Length: 328
Image 1: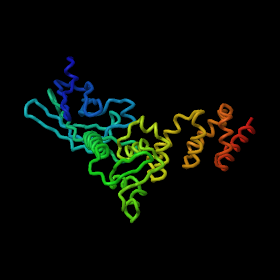
Image 2: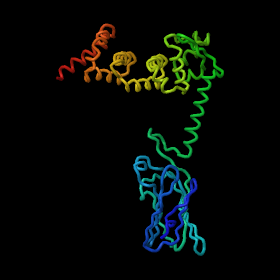
Image 3: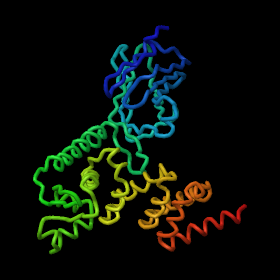
Image 4: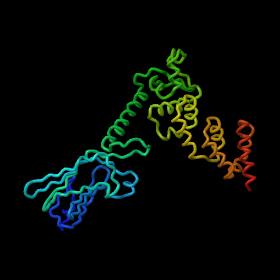
């Protein structure tokens, strides 16, 4: 049998498999064909009844995130009077295996025929548990539209397009937009909604941040921050996130500060964890100091810490040390 007997012809959303001859009591499975993100197969089995199956190629990807398909499938017989059998439209059918869609055809078909599958939509279920979304819609609406919007928002800041508020940092000033700041921070929104000096003077004084750190803060708010910029100013960004109640920035700083604890920064991070109520960071710093014994590598710094740190935090560290000694 020629290789073409198993080949499925495709366009972007249409697949056609031409069957030249299917003898009785015969099974045949097509070669894989690509539609959307998945490779697919068609199979036919003829006994007294003709069974047609459509299914994705089985892999870890299809098991974990199977396609949810909407399609119309037809069988067109090209012998004698042209017959076209159409299965009722299939809508949002999850297909994991070769048993999930089976079409049993009782009408006898002989000779040449075509199996025609028109995919109306293909969806996947997002990992966040929200409703299925189309793979053909998400490309533009989520990726391209969001990227364009963020680029435009970043340009508004970098090119000072219609700015209406001045941010005074410790060593310089930068202009921004009230509406953007208010949409990201309830603290800023309150400033601009009430008769406070910030509203009257069209200026905000952030004297505890350098101009570079303030620029990084605004770049984050506008969705335009670079990774190296974020890493360089994490502690200043953490302070600003706490002060202006921007929870996603605070959590981003929290997660990042967990990643590179070492002897040079552990005591500073421990104090910040206590100050800004970051439980995972505090726990990680405690374990690093006590369980892993790094407290002995920084005795001079630890002695300075004992002289100047918050009393409650010192007590917590000493309790951890005592608990560790009892464990030996």
